[in-house]
Amino acid sequence: MVASSPYTVIGLLEPHLDSPIVEAAQSITVAAAMPGTAAELGCAPGHPMLRVDRLYSDAGGAPVELSVSQFLPEHYTYRVTLRRSGVSPA
Image (cartoon, rainbow, N blue to C red; front, side):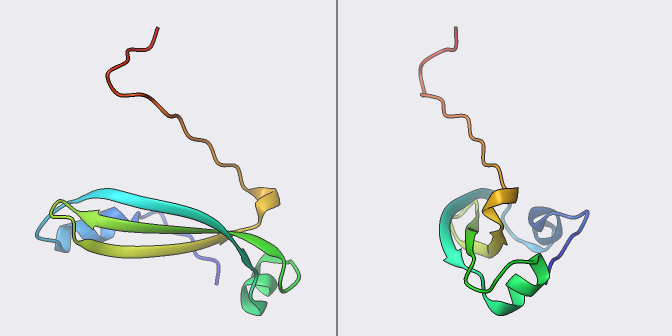
């Protein structure tokens, strides 16, 4: 199922939590497209997909939500900026 929403996981969950969400640990791996996912995305079953697991945690460190998404790698771009702590940019 392909889902789309104007709301975020944090926006929906946080009003019901005792402690705010402060962290999301993300992992990106490769997984084969299952038949249902393949049909929805227009690829062959077994096609390599990017699988993104995101575990949201609250201020106390308790896990709150696990989000699992799959993307066609040919339609996905990942960008990240890494900075060293204690070093100021020029």
